[in-house]
Each structure stands twice: as structure tokens, then as C-alpha cells.
Amino acid sequence: QAKGSGKNTHVLYDESMNQELEEKLILQGAIKQAVLNEEFTVYYQPYVEANSHEIIGFEALIRWFSEEHGTVSPYKLITLAEEMGLIVEIGQWVLKEACQFAKEINRERDVPLSVSVNVSPVQLKYHGFYEQVVQTLQEVGIPSEYLCLEMTETVLLESLESSVDSIQKLRDYGIHIALDDFGSGYSSLQYLKELPVNVMKIDRSFISHVAQSEYDQFFIQAMIMIAHKKGLTVVAEGIETKDQLEVLTAIGCDLIQGYYFSKPRSKKDAMTMSI
Ligand code: C2E
Ligand code: MG
Ligand code: MG
Ligand code: MG
Image (tube, rainbow, N blue to C red):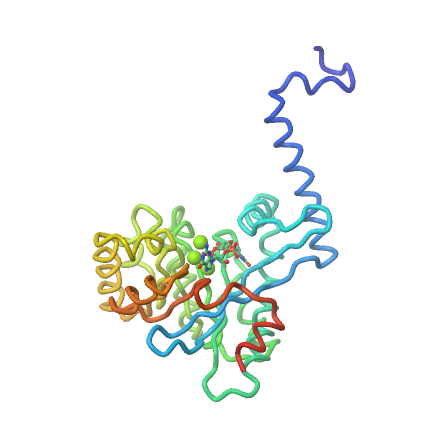
């Protein structure tokens, strides 16, 4: 069919590819609208100290309950936002929400809880990022120690040197930095060596078999030993069972996060939990 023959031009393409692209374009349009309408919300999942099971802090996780598209997965939302150049704006919005949450939960506490915010590589590369973070902390009025920024090693795939500089600057300001999804990439240990992070989060993929697999236990134990040698705090994410909790605690993991303790909760529910 010739181009310009109107409605039927789409038969030139593979049907499923065409449909996928169409869905993507529709979702992208919806994301733009969602930013304007402030349709996103932030959920908070607690992480606890492994031995005492006391809450130490919360991870902020974006949620989009779209009237038209249902609950859109954060992976999908973030990936599309990155492609569209909207991640800086969305990420900044999450950061502000999370800082306000940190302020509220710590209003009447002696030992402060921290709040962890996921940062996309695109955000870290954005030149005004450091200033934006500092300004947000000042505007909201919380100390830098309340905030932890979580980054995956994909942050570094392009330019290790400039990432190290950016992360060091944030660390110097007193912000905690976590290496998220540790072990899921192919050269994680090298990155652990180079990066000025102070928290390591073991990827959920290692946790799922840890109660059955001796190899996985040894492997995680080795990662924890290396992290501790570097003075890092180790978090296990995705703990769903008592067995997993017991193994991770026994091999020296510091903090635990996962459905076993709590799923991510709305701000209101997380607040109640933190009292
Ligand atoms: P992540 O940072 O590794 O977050 C942990 C994910 O594991 C969350 O998924 C959380 O709900 C889920 N999880 C926690 N405990 C368990 C468990 O016991 N079992 C299982 N099956 N899952 C568990 P979620 O909320 O769907 O987020 C997925 C990813 O999307 C995050 O992975 C993060 O990479 C990204 N993301 C979420 N919010 C943001 C954000 O505000 N900004 C950016 N840049 N990325 C975000
Ligand atoms: Mg994370
Ligand atoms: Mg993670
Ligand atoms: Mg992850």
C-alpha cells in the first residue's frame, strides 16, 4: 500500500510492533498530562535494623494510579520519563515529597529516621542536580543526614569519573549514598571500589534463593565482608520470609527491607507506622 493512502498506511508495519509503539505514544502523552495534573504519589517502604527489627528509615517509591491506564509500573514510568526528558522534573518532585515526609516523621523523634530516594542516571548527569538537592533540603528545612540517595551502577556505565565527582560532592554535604541493586550488574565489585558510597543494597535476585542455596549464602557473605571492610552499611532488599531474614541476619547484614516486614505504604500509613 502506498504512502499517503490514508487510513491503511499502518499495514506497512508489523501489526504488533505498531501496536506497541502506539501504546507507548499514548502512555507518553498520559505521562506529560500526569505531570501537569500532579497525578503521582509516593509510597514509603520501611527498612529495619536486622537484629532489633526497629525501623531505621523508609525508601520513597513513586506510584502512578492512573484513571485511564490503571497502576503503571514504576519501571515503565521511569524508563519512559527518562526517554522523554521528564525524569529531572519528576525526580525533583519525588525528592521534595520525600524530604517533606522526612521532616514530618522526625518532628517528635530523638533518633531521626532517614528517607531514601531513587535517583536516575539521567538526574545525576544533569548539571544542576547537586544544587537542586541542596536547595530542596534547605527549603524543606531538614539536615542532610536525613537523606539517602540510591543509585544503580548503570549511573556509571558512561562516565565513571564525573559520577565519582558528583557523588563525592553529595557525600561531602552529608547526604548518604546507596549503591542499589548491588550484584545485579557485571562488574559490581569494581564499582564498589571506585564509588564513594556508604550504603550497599544487595539485589533482590540474590535474596530469593538464599535460604535454599549454600552458594548464594557464601556469595552474599563475601559481599557483606567486602562492604564492611569499606565501612559500608549493608541492606538486603526483598526479604519475604522468616528463613531469609534469619539467614541474612546470621551472615551479618545490617538492615532489612522487604514484604516480610512491610510492603510500600501510603504516606499516611507509613507515618502511623513510624510513631
Ligand atoms: P528499587 O529501588 O530496587 O526498589 C525496590 C523495589 O522492590 C520496589 O519496587 C519495591 O516495591 C520492591 N520490593 C520491596 N520489597 C519487596 C519484596 O519483599 N518482594 C518483592 N517482590 N518486591 C519487593 P517498585 O516500587 O515497583 O519500584 C521498582 C523500581 O522502580 C525501583 O527499584 C526503582 O529502580 C524504580 N523507582 C521507583 N520509584 C522511583 C523514583 O521515584 N525515581 C526513580 N528514578 N526510580 C524509581
Ligand atoms: Mg531503590
Ligand atoms: Mg533496589
Ligand atoms: Mg531494583
